[in-house]
Length: 43
Length: 77
View (tube, rainbow over the protein chains, first blue to last red):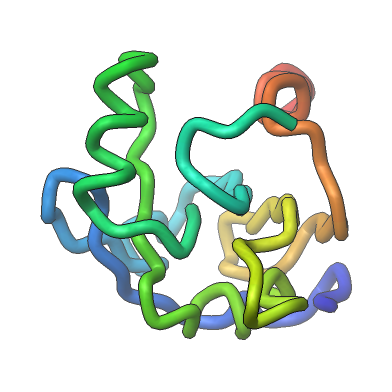
């Protein structure tokens, strides 16, 4: 788990359209991230 | 963000016309770094994270409601 004040782990990934998304793209902005177990599943 | 492929997430994004990107962490590296790869046999745990403007963790939650939590967070930011 991560704690408030920790440096957010850097990441680079691809979105569903193939575009690269990096943590640094959001520099100076607040970012909300959430994980889900499987596309299009309730919960 | 999930461990799904781009094709799986593309179908999901198009079905619901989401206005945010769905990131495909197929090798689980991001999920592991963020504490969401709890069981490697399963999909990601529903971890929710808020990162502040300085790139530091503001909130980390082990389980969030994917329908309610993002809107709730954005509403109070």
